Length: 454
Image 1 (cartoon, helix red, strand yellow):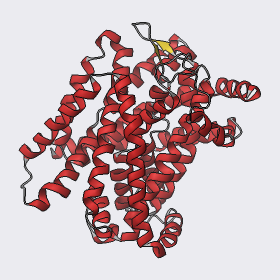
Image 2 (cartoon, rainbow, N blue to C red):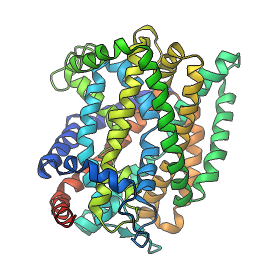
Image 3 (cartoon, rainbow, N blue to C red):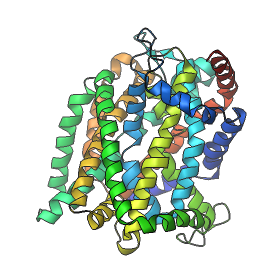
């Protein structure tokens, strides 16, 4: 297991270097400038679209704008917001959150472009059904000679869609919050039991296909966000005097980098390491530029690609700028980030436990629903990737691969799982961002036409 951890750590470090940072953040900044900040100027219109003002049941596609965003958010709002933020702060200090904000703001533009392309260049699977996602807009938008990028994305997309971090941290939460405090000894068998229960719950939903997934997600995502939002606001109101102090610390600490070894070789040392760490955790949380969200938004019932891009753009706002910030402040104002060696979901649980009566159990409810909803959405993404590679009639085989990964994730250390996903996400981002940058002028042209008709 130690050898596996070391191998996966090297894999993650290899993937997350300066070239990827330039591609994700530099590419995102290029998209912002290329569009003349267009997506940001139409936030109000994006909200109107999300509310269903422009819905037409006769439009092509499978699900509504709201269900598309809910499906995308059900994968992004999850352990990235609870475990990912806690990991960012425990490794990089409060300043890591600032670079997650940067990732989200740039990610808004990236999601606008990628999800617009997902509808603009929808392709058909082997069954003749309309599909969207990076693999389709690469082939349909750039042509067959670029199919190798679509294949690369699909291969890593199948791996990146495995729910290994969500399952691992859900297992950790159940152990730390429920089993250990009640005197239950945590063993391989208890972890395996948790995994088998998750397999049963997940199988019931994912075997029902996209309609069942989107229906569950559209009901679960809003309610779980509201519950989590209320709980964190209570923690912040109890510690209201600390909130301005830590908001300021997030900004000032972003350029201090006190939490990394001085021999970090990236971007001039410790500051570069902090920036990279924050961007990495931001990508893990909101998935902007990775290509997952376009697979959900590409299934939306609309014949207006720009409209779906605007809806997708709201994802990083909700996920990172709101939910992740709330988590970070809860961890910071309670002081647990300085007083406990806990990491991941365990650190967030410590903050809730210190601040609220039975707070850790209330967090457990949120963690459970965050994780379960993510399990459903990721299965859909993985099947779409397999469908592209092997044909729609074989995509159901991914379910078995997916279910095996749940068992493996529940019985494997957190460090191995997070390094695996970080590395795979990096290799998903490369084809997605390259294709998006090449196709950006077509999105700008479509946007100008759309807004001239608005």
